[in-house]
Length: 94
Image (cartoon, rainbow, N blue to C red):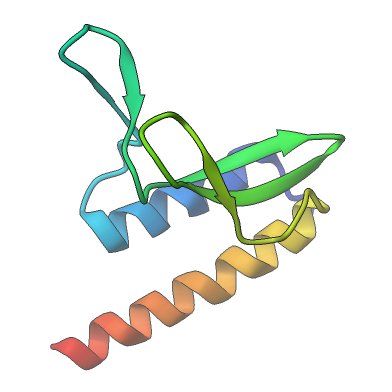
């Protein structure tokens, strides 16, 4: 099966929902400009590849979890494992 950006974004939304109960990655600041929400996960796309990142600061700085842009399949496998770990953690907390 081909992994598309739409598949990867759905998994990013799942991660944000499991961690923050929201899929929002930006908010409108007092100056009426969009600002990233620190800690929220995003999908970065460049150089023909994908990276799983989270916002590190309100200026839009990003922390990379794949250490560079890789294939869609690599990003998908990382997200699949990450989601499984988050669900296990959630189950253990109940």
